[in-house]
Length: 377
Image 1 (tube, rainbow, N blue to C red):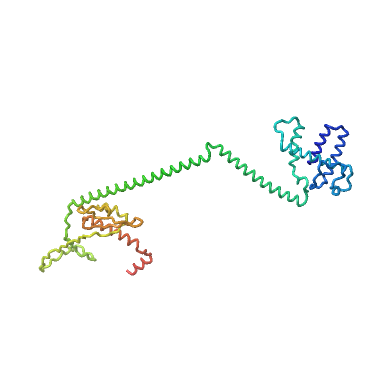
Image 2: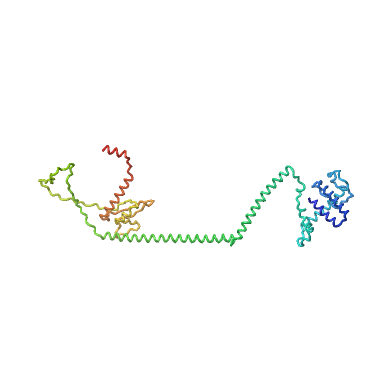
């Protein structure tokens, strides 16, 4: 293809400088040159331009063959010299282009742009055969190159879109990241400061509440100690009732009165007893749900750390601790400091807890077992 275009250029030059006969001769020579160049081995290099036509045909005469005429063989060195000079000229025009002056006409544009196409024409496209294994390899390489090209174009398009999105933002990315990090650090420090302040405020509130509870308990204990306790009667009154009979009396029969013994009866003085007064505190474990009942009785447990000093009235119940889950409280109750109503109420609370525990732990009876019990009774 390069040779054909070169011949066309030579034809244009010949039209400018030669008459019609010389133009026909140049066309015939260029045609013969093209036909000869098609069979020349690509490895063969042309002879230098100083070689004369009288020296005879070149050394590639054996490679070309015997069917060429002497005229054609003689024109081959001249054609080679022209091609070499034109190639050198094309190289110079490509390496040193005229980029300042504009195109004069269409022919000037062709003459100035055509060397790029001739100089950049791959040699393998002119020498390689498009048949058999080479064609398959070419197809495979083309497919691989197409895949890589598509991937390259996809990456470039994504990169272009990314740059476009970055350019649409109000600020640079590095500045935005730095400002966001600074704001985040300030928020973290402020949250830590607020957490510490909240913790200290809660501790202060708990301390004030403990002081208030201790003051209220001390005032309540002084109030309870100032109230006089009523004397408890130690005599047990006995009630005598007639024995109930299983049969009914006849109608109209007067009931018989109690018989009076004629034997002398000695007057026996009634026995008196002194109730047991516990001098030490009794450890008791109560659930948290029983605290309202204790508060209703006036028994308010006081923590061991908030006990009054010696010489001041001590509370009746002291809170020693609680279980791991906080459902059971360990108390120490000083019975000697309780009134009779408080003792009876505490006994009722303890009895209810014991009965509840026994009912929950008792096994369930089936109807058959109940029937068996009734039959045995």
